[in-house]
Length: 458
Ligand code: BES
Ligand code: MN
Ligand code: MN
Image (tube, rainbow, N blue to C red; front, side):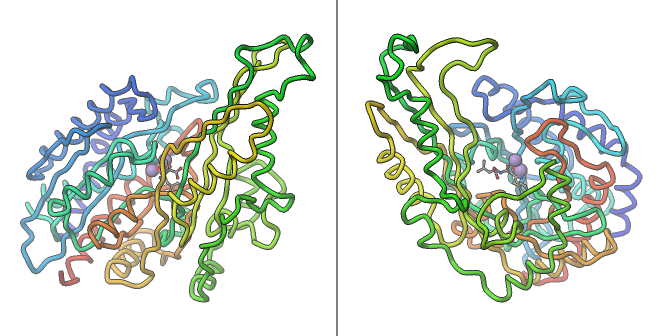
């Protein structure tokens, strides 16, 4: 079964790529509400594809946001595990568009990489699971295990309707474990399994001062300027060490176990890698933690955007009537994202001095997660990576967030294997890309994974 599937996948490389390109041409940007037709086009495209491959019970579930897409193949029998695959078909906005070397929605191959928005995050990575399934179904007519697939279309804006969907469909989604390909490995010759993800609380602050923009000469010196106020607030979020100053922020942070410390010590990510990726020289932040700890296992508070007043060409003398900022916090065990939102709002409201009206609201919250380091699924995943990448995977802690992992744990009681195939790939940035060979290796790894999982009993 394994070899037939691998052979089929290899013989169909070009067609798989052409099909992925079709999906990549759909600009499914979840952040923009006017993109709803594109979201539904992507959802429909995936549903058609699932049917074509041979999945049963394929459904497009409407929601308040973009639709969920579901399909299943459950004919492997009762004694065989069921695996739930998750992916997201939404992508990030493309701005700044002028920084792209090719159209983000006209995929192109250069230097062995596919360039397109969403190719690594997450269309190309999640598509490996569909092509792996097709490779089995088109050769032996069956899969080694039972497979359920769920796609959502609003992961990039905080999975606003996902928890409700999972809660309402626990039976439909019931499985023994989940697998997600939406993360990166350390290097082409160093596969890795993410065992820990940070959570996220995303806030917005809006300040209102004078009833209208004012002449900065006539009124300057008498008004607590909202742009000044937002700068003061943002400046007060950290102390000089880079430690977050929100009272209570660190109260629930769980210390690292010795096991985790030794796992992290094996991660071969260096300051030089960081320098190459960022173009920066000196890492900022909490001095008592290594830079690797700062980007993985420490909670953070970051300004994502700040606005207020005049920023066009030239000089305009004005006191702005409004200003604001979007601030997100990455969270770690055992911080509670809702509680952190409250702590943030209380603190920031107290900081807003002078005659400035403040409004603070929560965009989204998502939980952190920790996956087991030892389990039959992890063993199968390690073997699968080793078979394809010729190297044993290491465990990594990831600074980014995939809140569905915590939702699956809570609502379905199942662990998730984070089986990524990406590299840094410029995700969320201009020139997002995904190596062609990692797309193919991803398919091969999933094929191996399903076979190895079948050797575990349900
Ligand atoms: N695939 C990423 C998460 C990720 C990033 C994993 C880097 C591994 C490496 C995911 O699509 C993402 O961007 N998540 C958001 C979540 C948020 C909107 C709740 C994130 O981390 O900002
Ligand atoms: Mn993603
Ligand atoms: Mn993303």
